Length: 272
Image 1 (tube, rainbow, N blue to C red):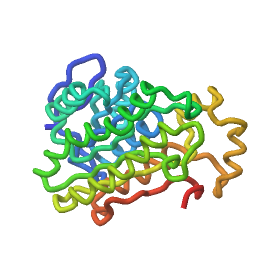
Image 2 (cartoon, helix red, strand yellow):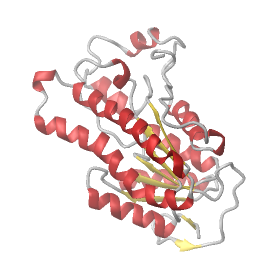
Image 3 (cartoon, one colour):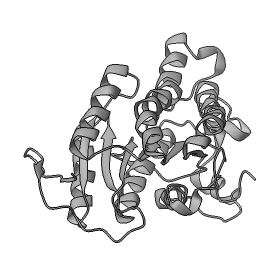
Image 4 (cartoon, helix red, strand yellow):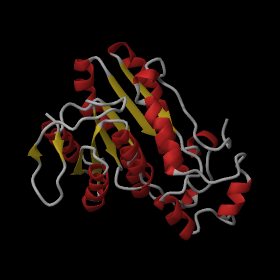
């Protein structure tokens, strides 16, 4: 049974929401769903008909996204989660299954960034970024794969980074973690393909998100400005979260059933 999210109240059983999108009847979980790319993916999958669990460390912002989905006539649930904490991941996905049903679609968008000269990266910083970006992806996949295997259908989309493809100065820890997400995706796709589960990764390019703007404000682009980076991008514009969400929508659809283990670059042509 699907539940409609009600702010400031317990979820209550209601009549199933009628959906006309291609993902009607399916449950999607989006980590990092409270902002940026995760928020865009959550909204898009809801518009495609899925009931969406918005998972994020910031529960207040996750509730705001769930409210947006409900305002558009969809079904959503906000769940607090720390993807670096195995117990938190287990609780979050148990709540999602109890209130929405088995998860058929997982988008791993939760992430942590950082910028330091290599010799200034501490072991603590290295471990923290790898734990969120790579281990968090691993934990969330382990939480949903048994149910997907039982159903014989599943879609996993891991958000990596174009910095993992070309490298990025002063971001060795971040780029390494996202490179791990790419190889994790390829390996998992080979293992889960026979079970009807596809696993793909989207490495976004220069996308206008709150995380990117924080990096800009912190001077993490060196001497480059946004205009400089746009000038180096073939399509001559900054990406938008909806650009990533559109690719994610396709990868989560039935039409993408023959697409797995792939790196689907959405970067304006900067990495080909």
